[in-house]
Length: 285
Image (tube, rainbow, N blue to C red; front, side, top):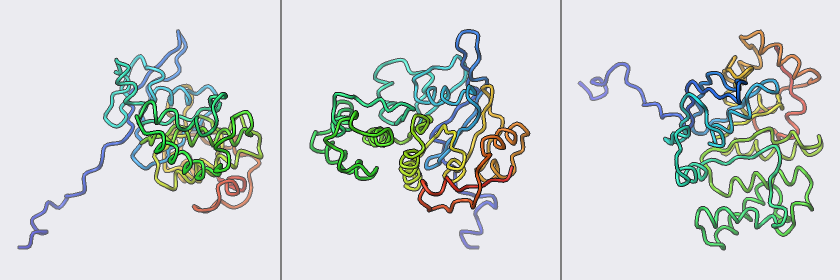
């Protein structure tokens, strides 16, 4: 009898634990509940989009994952670190080294050049040599299409350019996970595509991403999984194709119907330029 014949019939490759795991997460501000029992898993290499109406707890959820907020109940684990149990500054720094966070506002240091904005944290937090950090910064600026802006100051850049610098700054810390919180909400329509194109390329590169976004067509095009939240609970989750094409919840269907009104055309292909692709997407809900 050969060796394969001796293996159990149900033998399979072990499934790796998720990079991000939330279980029964509750958080209230005073008497106002914001998160009411959130469960969520994000596997390494996944892009997960969180969608839903304003005030549904999406941004709060990202802040809990990053350790900026602590839930009153439930567990949050990122790469084996219990985020809900961080007790020391050393533990918090260890977590922040592994998570990049890009906010709605760019939060760049206005008195520092673009290059210095990218170099500061790797030198001070990661202990990199200045020369090494600068080489990485120049490579990242090239990646986000801003190779010629290293010596510029944030006030000299457009909103879209500043947001791309913010993304490059997050990447300079070499994170395992990057969180995007409505990063196009403060941009004018002409610069939204610049930022979405960069994020789409990061997803194609296999970076683990969790995005809160109102850009529905973009979310469908880039996401492995889509999570719809409302009133602090997960109403529906599934593949992008399932959620956008055949949502099981009437509430999801109603939300998408309103959010996607006005979009027409063909669904973008997987490798189309994101700034062109998301503008021409269509969905059946």
